[in-house]
Length: 67
Image 1 (tube, one colour):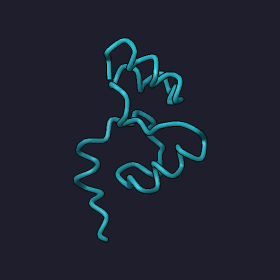
Image 2 (cartoon, helix red, strand yellow):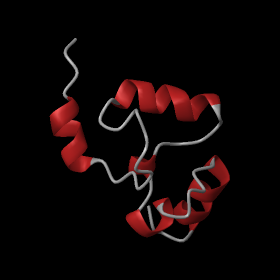
Image 3 (cartoon, helix red, strand yellow):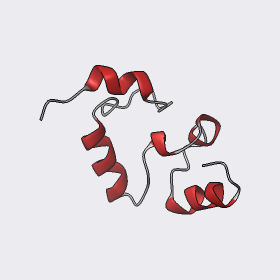
């Protein structure tokens, strides 16, 4: 399967600039799941900028109706 990095970058809201996985979704998801986290794209931009990408943070946002 061909990576669609350029298309993925247009939707990527990751604010961590030195990230080497930007636009390479399969690498990004694998990296974050190993750390029991979700990638930036699962969060609203203001919540993503906190860098708290834990499942618990995501669940709190769902409870509040923000996701």
